Length: 152
Image 1 (cartoon, one colour):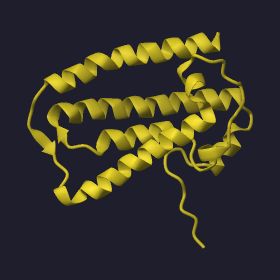
Image 2 (cartoon, one colour; image 1 turned 90 degrees about the vertical axis):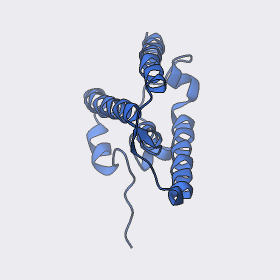
Image 3 (cartoon, rainbow, N blue to C red; image 1 turned 135 degrees about the vertical axis):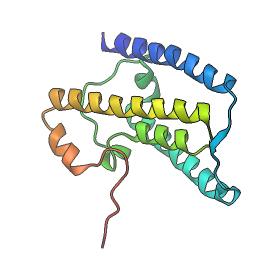
């Protein structure tokens, strides 16, 4: 049943995202923020980091399992990228949302999507704490969105 729930959730999420994306592309408006041209290499680096996080997360979660096309193993995963941060997919989402120039429409869409990601994180954290007894210790050890930089 978890497999079908995941598949239905992903389908619902995709279908509800389509109108927002369509509206954003159709709504032309003034820029509220444009990255200076000299930041292009930095922005490309941020995009590469986001794609690395996506790739690293799917190595742990399994791409087809994540989408709901394959049965998910029911275990608290703490290997790979999950040793460094708890929510690499959400981090990648935030990076990809805010690395682009912002028209008024994109700003509001990205703000709504960021709130969605934060709400999703909060709900997921509640669920994981309820399901896995070791999650609290894991959450204290591993940050949610950005890895800690170790000092020597």
